[in-house]
Amino acid sequence: MTRLSKPLIFLVAAIYFAVDAVFMTVAKPLADWVANHRVFDALRSWIVSLRPYPTLALFMIPLVVLEPVKPGAAYLAATGHVKLALLILAVGELLKLVLVERIFAISRDKLMLIPAFGWAYLKYCEITNWLKATEAWQTARRWSKLAQYTVRGYAMHLKTSGRFSAQAR
Image (tube, rainbow, N blue to C red; front, side, top):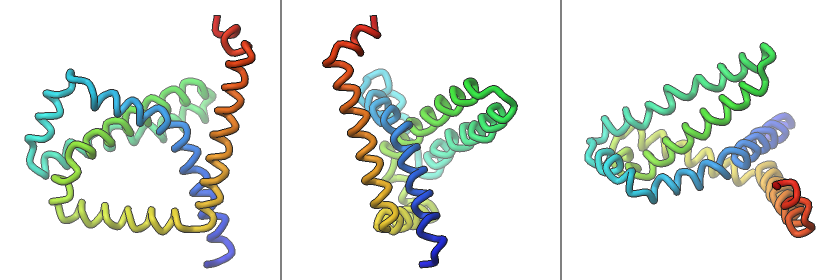
C-alpha cells in the first residue's frame, strides 16, 4: 500500500460515512415506511410480477433520472444558489436512495439472475468488504460513531434541560 493510498482510503471512508449519516438516517426509515404501507402493495405486486430484464430497467430509472441532480446542484451552488442546491441535492439523493433500496429489496433475487448484474453486484460487495476491512475505514467508522453519539447526547441534554422544548414552542 503506497503512502498516498491510506489518506485516499480515509477520505473515501470519511465521505461515505458523512453521506451515510446524513442521507441514510432519513432514507432508511422512509424506505421502511414505504415498505410497510398497504397503499404500495399493488406497486410491490407489479414489481414482483416483472421478469428480470424489465426489473433491471425499472431499477435503473431512479439512477438515470436522479443522478444528474448532483452536477445540477453543484452548478447551482457554484452560481450562488447554495440553499436551493442543498435542497435539490437532499431531495434528489433521498428519493434516489429510497427508490433504489426498495426496488432492490423487492427484486434482489430476480436481479441476480441477470449474469452481468450478479457479477457487478458481487464485485461491488468484494470492493466494499475490502474497503471496510482497511484500517482507514475502521478509523473513519469509529469517528462517525463518536460524532453520532456526541450529537445524540447533546440533543438529549438539550431536551432534558428544557431548552430544546422551549425553542420548539
